[in-house]
Length: 114
Length: 115
Image (cartoon, rainbow over all chains, first blue to last red; front, side, top):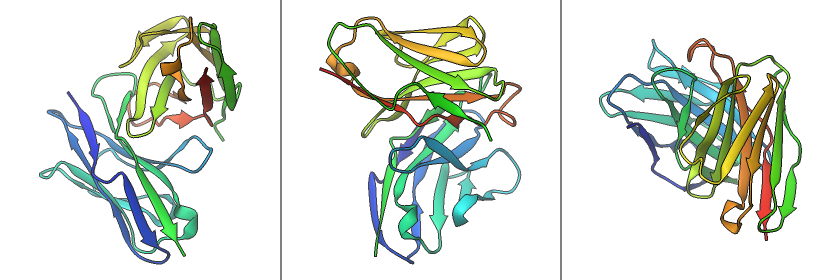
């Protein structure tokens, strides 16, 4: 069965510093991987996705993620964060088969401090 | 822009009440989903629907039912609300046709408190 582990529940960081949010998955089959962001009092919004091809994926708001099949990881990075990046970030893996179901990690709360 | 709306942002109900959470999407999506979001647990799938009147159980369906009478509307029903159903409930929709087309779009959520 597929599962997703987000290794950090909270990540505090100062403004303009780089950040990495870690995500590992387990699956016996090929997967599709996603990062979603949830700003306070809002629903989830897609940041980026890996479906196939280049292992470095660029998303919105300057975020990028690298798919590493050998390490079963899909870590999210940003070289310089802003206060407005304060949010909760969710890594997700799609189930093989139909209906596009997703399995989510527990989430990482990113707190950017001035 | 895809719009997924949920009938209430905040809801307070008493134990034993029947609760209806409504979700509407305006992009003619075939698939609709109900998730529950709890701190430290992420999002867990309750039910999903891939067509009108069709539904499938997710990972935590116990205590919930769903209804999809029209393509744009997907309702989550708590037959007899209990305090352990206090949570944030998120609705999502997506096109069918495989993961390439199947990005899920989320509503703003309904924070339900059962007292």
